[in-house]
Length: 623
Image (cartoon, rainbow, N blue to C red; front, side):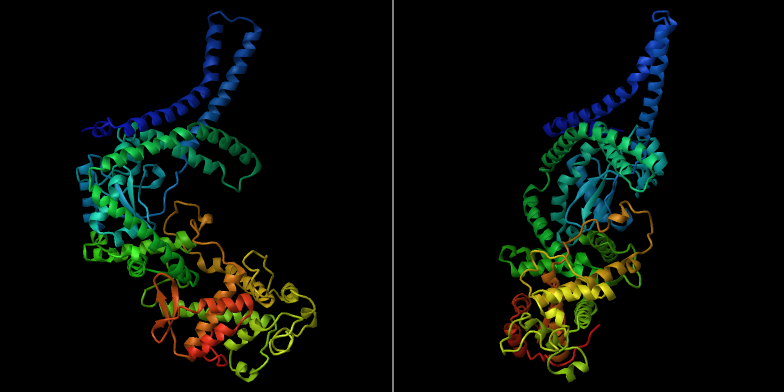
């Protein structure tokens, strides 16, 4: 049986550079060990000198015992640091494991690719809800057993047995594949994309590189252990010293470790050139296209559902629809849809639907911080149900929230109060935002403080910005509304719009505080990442005040359109929730709502409503 060193040809420049860098990392470890043993060696010399009569006298006796005490302390500290580094759990990327029995064709493709590249095959395959692929070492005992069988066909030995044999053999890493690649790419394209990744298993099983990587990962995990909060003062001081030592070692080997990884990547890319080089160029274009479609699908389509407590269960299938729509709209993507007639890479899975569902749930957990399992407040949604279960609910929930804020501010309609008595209307928010600022006259000569169009408290109409101050005053008593910190994007809002922003922000803050009670769920196993850090990859920053108000006014308009003009909710694969009027997407609504929010100009929106047959005075149904 040949070793990893024999299987990998070290004549390549990148491979030789990687090994030299790995040896430099290991030399840092050796120097640290030598420093820890130096006091003990000096103590041995002093005791040997005393026993042979070369170092007699009371002074040498004191020196011997002082150095011996220092040596014992240093050795104990070194053993403690070594144990923490060895036992610390290295970080593991959250993935969906793919056993061989659930994807035999995919494993066969990867092994054939490894055979063509003359490198060891990956020990296992896993999927990640992202547009990337890499190799990951999971040989640490805390990572659990690696599924699969050994080369003789027998089940793999338990992790403890594997760890005991670690000195003699080095296990190949796990291949992590981006799940969108399996659904969007064809089989040949996936093979071309994975070629440079699989080629990296050669350097990974080289003993020196594997040892250097284990050392660096152990140091990194030890830093996380030392930085963990919640310890008492004595332990906090001990772990602070541990963290200082580990960080010192990391600084010493950081440059060599980075150079080693660059050299490994260069060697893998050089070796992968023998496999489908022409197809790799085309496949890289698909990688960029998949990333663009995946990002739009998550931020525009999945995120609204996650905020409603629903998670789309077929995200990877949705990325195909999103990229097909992108290909139809973008001339740069023309011709890419002709590939859809070829065999997709997801056919390499035995049950692509269940794998897609597991990857979709993991994506919701990583990008939004949702529970690990489905529940009554965290249930999957199919794409056919998305318009009714997500879009309709989202608009009506936002409209209801806006109405609650209007009620809290004491805002009533100046006209048509009889219609308002039967339910909320779009005219209420339209009249409020289109009224002039306090102390000024509107187009019809009526002041902004007309009863019904603004709060009747006289103190709110004395100076500009008084409505926001009124919201702050009432919120201090009943907790209904609270002020928000101004930012650069709320400046174009009118004064009344700023008061609504304050109320909406307070309402959302209360909902966020109540969210953990409904979004926490049981875990099937101990997670490989920090639960307190979820979401690990937030999709976008919090909405600004202006965006918040625009979203809620748009929701009111969409509810009025559905209840009075027969419009329906829809799904745009690239833009998310869409309003369909007579089967056509209402694409010109956003600038008209923006004009109302920013400038208090209701003209464009009112004209659009009349042309679309939407009745402002008719009551709408809320959530």
